[in-house]
Length: 395
Image (cartoon, rainbow, N blue to C red):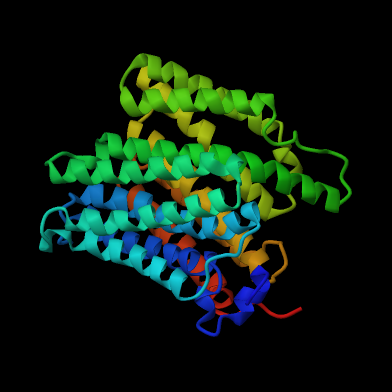
């Protein structure tokens, strides 16, 4: 019987794709991000209609927020939880079965108009519920109580997905509903919590490696906890009262605090390593989105859709890409440094965010944003897919 993660992975005789949780979910999550955008662009142009119960905009939002992000969360958690708890990771056919649940959800939502009402919701929600059950078991058995907050966020994310489906089934417009806002808010909170742990830690390790004396503030100090408490309050106001001026004030306060938090992490010291400045640049979209939404609510100085995309395309899209590239390199035995392909992926993704935010100037920028998004995630599939499909080289 395998006693270590490495032994368990070596003992698996099936496809390398199912030898660790990040492999199928990062690779096919990125592939789904490409496919979903390839479908969305003709839908945006009015030349394609999907057999889905969701209206086109709601399908687009769901495909990214709950489809793509759901896969990346699974890949991250199935890789991180064994490190947190000291227990063995899920590999083999159990991992393949969980992956199949995610795939079934994507198909069910895509063709939901061909299915009885509610079936797509049941199929789609089976995946986050199964993932949450797995994470709960590992945390309880491993007595890793400090990470119950991550489980709580995952539960909120699953609830948001359920609300999104309920709004669609009852004839609402989920793309502007409470389910979407709760999902986005939960994702932003996940980045604030998990990013607040890994970004200063990775930054410190790199600064030590290159013998630079500067050091970021240690993670999760009193100031960080204050920022997170304010963030919870501001996001709760946005979820429940998205048009209230008081919500705008809270979001501006949240944005300022996150800027101050990030300055403490020494982001300017990381410009020589794209794997690090990619993380810092992605995190910057949290305060940018909060400030833009706040200014829109108070003074109408910003497009609310553009502001929200600073979180969705920027914070979520860029942070997940930064995490996927770094984790894929480290866990497949490659050097933790970005090559030209990785830098190009980052630049395409940041270009997609900029074009989407400026799309109110001209509709063509929405299409340019979509093309750059496709280039970024197709680039990940091309650059990282081969190593995700092959076993990790023996040392």
